Image 1: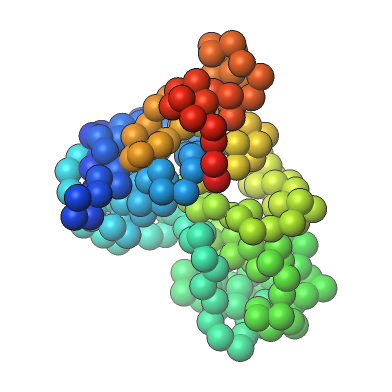
Image 2 (image 1 turned 120 degrees about the vertical axis):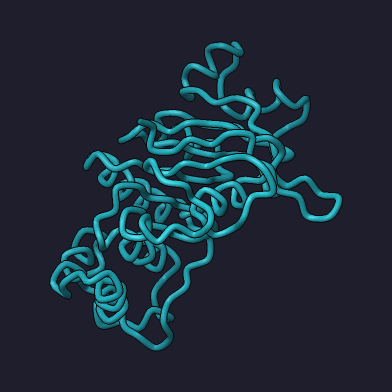
Length: 240
C-alpha cells in the first residue's frame, strides 16, 4: 500500500486553475519533493493532501484513509510543518514543544528530547519570537514530529534562511529520513530537492510535468541540473 495516492486532483479559484489534474504516489519510507516556482500549485496540493483544503475534484488516500473530509483518524499519524511557523505567543521553546506534546498526549520529557534532536537545548528558555529564522524552523519541525508521526509534510522549511541555516535544516531532515519516516517536502529550491529527495515532482502552472529520481531526470533530459530539466520542460528559465 502506498503512503499517499493522489488521482486527478483539481483546485480552482475563480478563473485560476491552481491545481490541474495532479496525480502521484508516495511509497512508505520515501522522501519526496514537490518543487517548482512560486505559484506552481505546490502548497495548495500539499494542503489538500493534508486534509486542510477541500479539492474540487479527484481523490486522495493517506495511509490508507481518505484525506477529506478532515479525517481525525489521521491526526496522530501525520505531522505538518506549515510554510509560516505558527507558535503560541510569549512561550519559550521548551514551553512550546511541551504544549504541542500535551496536545497529542505525549509526555513533556519527549518534547525535551526533541529539543535535543534539533539542537535547541541552549535555546530552551528563549521565547520563540527571539529565535533566529533557522532556530524557529527547527523548532517548527520538532513540533511536527513530537508525536512520532508515520508521515511528515514540510512546506518550504528552508525558505528565507541563510545558507548555513539551510544546511543545518538539511542535516536535520536527513536524520529524520534515516529513521524510515515518509516525508513530503515542497520547495522552490532545485538544489534542495536534488540534495534531499529520493524522487521529485516538477510542478508548474498547477501540473506535474515529471516525477522521478533527480539523477534520472537529469540523465533522461541530457542536462546538468534540475534547473536545466525545468528549462527543457517549459521553455523558460526557472524562477523561484
